[in-house]
Length: 272
Image (cartoon, rainbow, N blue to C red; front, side):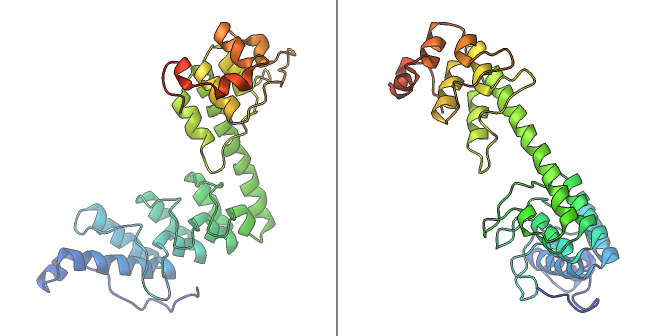
């Protein structure tokens, strides 16, 4: 994709003018989207702000995450274009107006992928401040960290990536501790799930947490997903050492594999 020329393109649509010209609501929306794509690509901050204001006031309705159909913006949203070309002011205005920070273009790239690829540090920071997901893999199987050629951006993304990973680990530990099987399953089913053997400050894994709270459904799900029942915490205890109740001890005992493969009806409720 290459930088467009100046400020040429469709003028900012006005509801009143379009209505007078006999344009339909659909035509007005399409015109507004094409204008937004053009201005986001070329960094026309004032025009973008004006267009977003008309949307906010209800004068016109359009999709802020619309995708281009022309050669210069095919499959890209306004946010992708602004990020790729490094138009930080436009990026910030789009995000404040509700643009999806993790929206994908037709190649599977997020805006973060595009900003990282072209080395736009300020834009990368803006996206991260709006909770851009660093773990998303594009159509080529790469994260934003893997497409950048800028060392500073790579270091920044690695730091945020670890913070996000730890947040997921804490959610997994919490789900096991509280017996939230559905949440635990959803976390483990993520494209990049948290470390199933992550630990809390006492060295307890999610399996330890499920064991001492007697959450057998969580324990079964963790074991079936590959949790290691032999890990010891800082007090040199395995999950079996902390197990509460006969069923939990059976699950975590030497016959754990056999228990997992038995019919689920032995245990009330669905496991996943």
